[in-house]
Structures are given as structure tokens and as C-alpha cells.
Image (cartoon, rainbow, N blue to C red):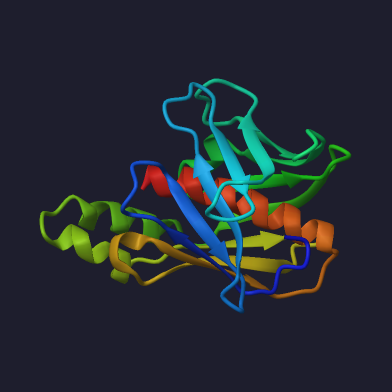
Length: 198
């Protein structure tokens, strides 16, 4: 996944019971298949090389039980920590806000929802019978990844789609390939959490 060719498309499966999606690069090549473990007290996802699930590339696990300000540790297939994504608990009540920490435990990037009202309108319309199926087309939140100088490096945006199942990650500035990987993995965990919250 280090040489991922942006933009990256995340496509959620709506035919499975699991919370899972496929990540494809600009050429349409699958770069990851992500599956969230069901019925766990601690959030945990597995990042496979592809849909065959024959090779695990990464795991991401919460450090606390069912806590809305937990840190999610990213580990490679050798069990080495490559970074973590931390949800900013109370700050995330209005607009989602996370921090991306590198393998040396240093703050590297901020991830912030760009417009909190989009989520509010999406939730309100989702409560109306029949109209709720349109929310995937009408309200499309976006999230920006900024460096410590507040420059936007990457943007994740929900794409108009049935059941709100498609997202796109666009890179706006060049960064190290290790950072590319950490950002993509962090956004994968974040979108699973935010999509479930509505």
C-alpha cells in the first residue's frame, strides 16, 4: 500500500453483515480489504491485502473498551506499531476531530470534519421514512487532513451513492510514502467509526 496511486476509493459492501469495504487506487486495483470485527468490546479492524483475506497487512485496535476518546493503534503484519489515530472525545461531538500520531508517538497530522451541519441534516433526513434512502445522495461530509502548519495534505469526501457507501481520498500535497500509508489507514479507521455514528 506504500505506493498507492491516488485518488483512493473506499467502497462499502452492503450485502454482508460485517462492516467492511474495499479500497481501490486510481487504476481500479484493490489495495486493501478492510473488515471490522463484530461484537468486540474493543474496536478492532483487520486490513487484508485483498478480498481473498489470505494475507493480513495491518491491524488497528482500540486501547480502551467502548470509549469515545480511545486511541486506535496501527500495527503491521509483524506486530510493530506504525502509528495511531486518536479521537478527540468532547471536541468531536459537533465536528469529528482526530489526531494522527507517528511511530515515535509524536503528533503528525490533524483530521477534522469540514462542516458539522452536513452530518446534522443527514441525520435529520435519515429519520424520515422513504426520504432516508436519499441521504446518500444529498449530504456528503468531507474531512481534511492537515499538517502541523495547518496545510491541507489530504481530503476524504463521501461520494453521492446509494446507502452512502462510497468515499474518495484525494492527496493535495506530496508527502513521504510512510505518511501516505499512515494517513490512509487512519482514515479507514475513522470512516468506520464516523459512518456508524451516522
